[in-house]
Length: 362
Image (cartoon, rainbow, N blue to C red; front, side):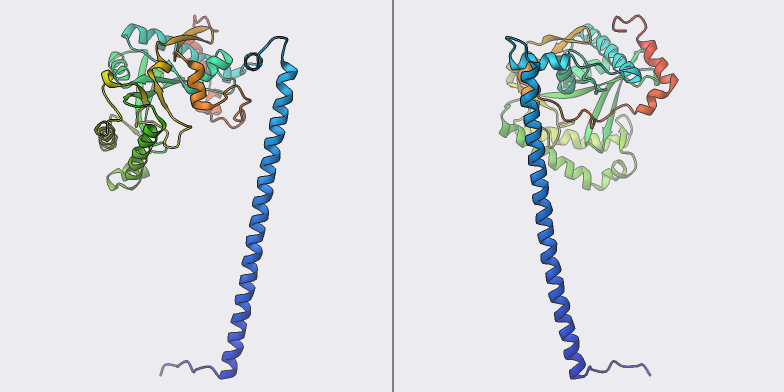
């Protein structure tokens, strides 16, 4: 016969109830103490950040006047400071020189094909602020109109020296397009960012682009048909059969932008937008640019050569970074696109040196 639970006595029940009340009061007290501690920690953090910000501001206020020469403007002082910073050294500088050589050849190739590019973001910042690579940077950022990228890809489809790789990157939900040497030992590359014709370059219009891109990202993260991309092949070759499903999603949302009138033909455009394929969903400000900001393209110095850049490079940089002549905060935290251990491989160093053979930048 199974045992049965007997009802508690009145005394034991009230003793247990009193224990529960005591525990309840104790938990409430602990919760109050925890909330107070959290607020105190948050207050300390706010105070620490405020003190750090104040210290940073005070340091900058003292730095620039000390460096200034007679008659120099603030901008001139800051530019002279940045251009006087020492270059990268050793294997890291070898990588930069190899990337620079690739960029010089890319410039000549684009001219021969009849397409345009423009230095953007970190590369434009390096050109204007350092007249070359930012000393702690190792990649190249170039923007091109969508049809110009397609024309360049067609031109070098059977080229022995160059290749353009196209991957779908799940981590960034983007179409990653890179111009490289065909030599697989050479890690140098140029990121090619797609630009599309925009009917409007206002903050409101760009915010709508980001909303539609966020919808696309949610679909990519939830779609059963894209599980393979999410869970198994985070970097998916765009020429593979599986990639066709990803490409269809990009094209469908691109059509939405066209249907809403955000993307238009060249004849009806007032500027260029980042393509939905690689636009930051939480990017810094508005990544739309008027034709007046961009054209006619100018030439700016980069590692001893004059390369293509937006007409109003200063305005475009302020558009993207704010005051880009302030001291940067990513000197030690900047992401390395080429792993440092790769540069310790002699085959890699040899491939880079081979691309530099006869180059005027060595």
